[in-house]
Length: 332
Image 1: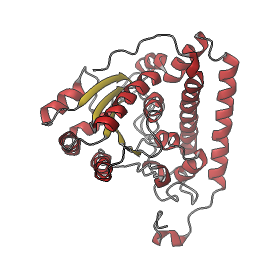
Image 2: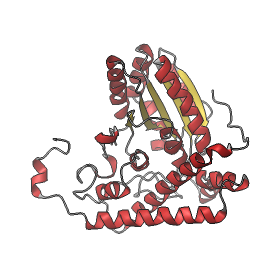
Image 3: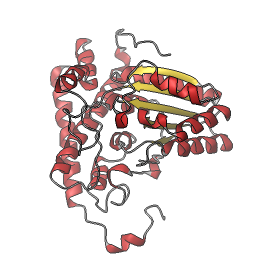
């Protein structure tokens, strides 16, 4: 199991890397805030599941993989596709159902894809991405390359058969894959916040062992270092890893869900906000002299301006024409 991330001094030589992690988390946070506003304005149709509070998980993990690796996620995937490099305007346009969206406006919030960046969803069915990610890892092994697949899913997915079947096959076939459980504590009422709950469920149903790590999902540096170890296992040993990132979602399950008052109190939410992953990294960077408060404010303003441009791009993007009913997004 992963040990608590040591609060040692940051390496000044990696200051640029730390600042990049902060900027990426700020991009996700501001993008999600604007997506929430747009949903309230009626610009986003269907469901909309926001990632606010969980930024450290996707940011830290995806900073540890390469551009040619394959990424799979569930329906709370706005952050993951942004962090893969898809432009905020293209992602926002998809939320708006516009033709310039990453899935040509056909996928919406829960079904985002960017094949050019090996981002293969965005899956609305709980756990559907698990066997697909294992299939990609099997293809990698079959081709003999040193790529890997990384698969993100919520803790509620550990209750379904695809989780157990996929992890069994990944361990048995020694696939180059990293599974990341984003345990935000309230997945469809499972409340898997008890110590080692994910592991208890896994071990009861899975026949084969694999490397396991638990990490503080509110600490982007801890998530990154944990994922680096898992990536090394996948590339060098063709060995899968199951990471449980214990995080916290500040929003409701979806935009249709209240932030508090339904299954948690306002007091609980405010207490968890003291562990905000963005503020946590900002404090470390300022405390060690790697960024000043003015630098952070400017970065925040620059990111917010980028997100505003994304909203404008989405607003100006056309609706898909009737002919789009008969076209394949990736036909070319």
